[in-house]
Image (cartoon, rainbow, N blue to C red; front, side):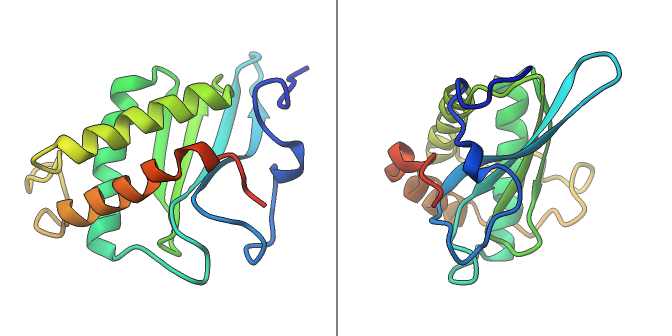
Length: 158
């Protein structure tokens, strides 16, 4: 049996939540599924801006998607996917067998710090990206900086 609370998650914030009551930025576990062979797939909500109040511009969101993809690939062997939310307020993160909150937080922190010092968005050639010219590195850096200032509050969702 998985003890989510022991791994740093508040059981009250797992599952669907009223978007009017959450306080972004935050990281929360949405849920998980057990596979036939005992592996677990975990889905996380990386909420960067306050729902229904503030959203990221599409170019910024696109650049963050690329930067997060490369960062999670680099730092987490458990990484499966990261994808932008259609509402432009954050990202879905999917990991295999990884549910320690502090491990996820420390890796996201490293990725955000890397964003602050990078001089280019990765994977932006026409070979690698379907809209190669549609990026905003400065916007991504602004979001990364704002998120890092709130790092100590990322698990405070409600």
